Amino acid sequence: MSKQHITTTINGNEVEFLCETQQTLLDVLRNDLGMTGTKEGCATGDCGACTVTLDGRMVCSCLVLGVEAEGKAIQTIEGMAQGDKLHVLQQKFLEHAALQCGICTPGFLVAARALLERNQNPTEEEVRFWLAGNLCRCTGYNKIIEAVLDAARELRGA
Image (cartoon, rainbow, N blue to C red; front, side):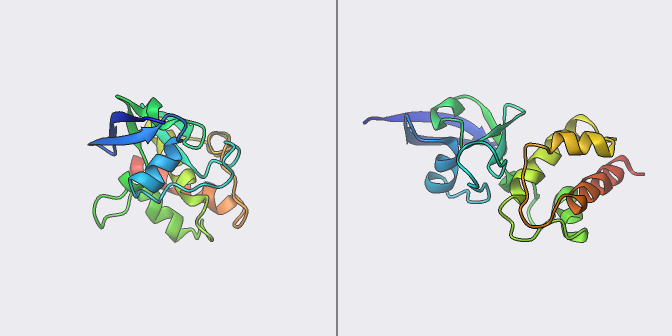
């Protein structure tokens, strides 16, 4: 099987890689590019642990082929912090103890960032709706929702 040459942008950096046509974006990120922040929870698109944004749209990277990344812009969990400075969402997840095992956390953070980029003043219902594609088996959801709402307040300067 021949590999395809792909050029894409990941977290603002141009990246080139070779991948098999049947290889998922999740596998490319984790196994070929060493970006292990994105997690595999189910491999069926049901849990949201592998959520990334592809041209600004949230996708489960376990359901996207690596070859589909050609010419696209991808944002992963690795692109959230700026050096040692955590993104406000990451900081609020820590402050609210909105994580335990960490498998779901990257997907929740990427999804929450996508929400707050569109709406810095979401209601609790909007946050719950936006994050409905992400499953947590450890913490429950209240701390996660509180962390996102707190991050939104901080981003608004409220």
